[in-house]
Length: 105
Image (cartoon, rainbow, N blue to C red; front, side):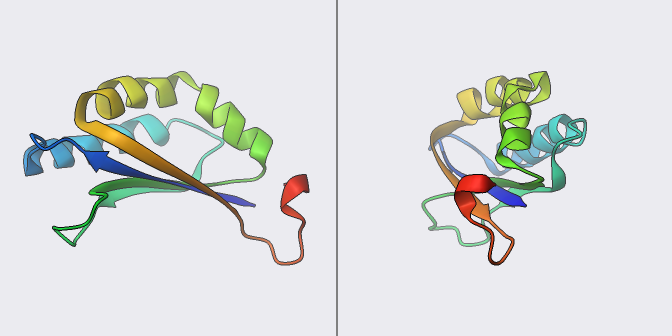
């Protein structure tokens, strides 16, 4: 099982209302993608944090993660949220099954 997290640094002009809209758009886009399980998105509760917004989801394999990243709903999220409100993204991909070699995930 793969756990995918992306942390986003939002633009200085991004308001609290914009963050709320980012959460709404991400949830609308990703709940339509069958490959993404346990999808979450939200804002950081620490106001001085470098990354103010995140998305996270579980995938059965790296191949399913790649399918997700090619999905039109993911591309809609990139266009409507990432390109509009963020300046930088940090992607993290973890293997969650003990004893499993990550290269076979």
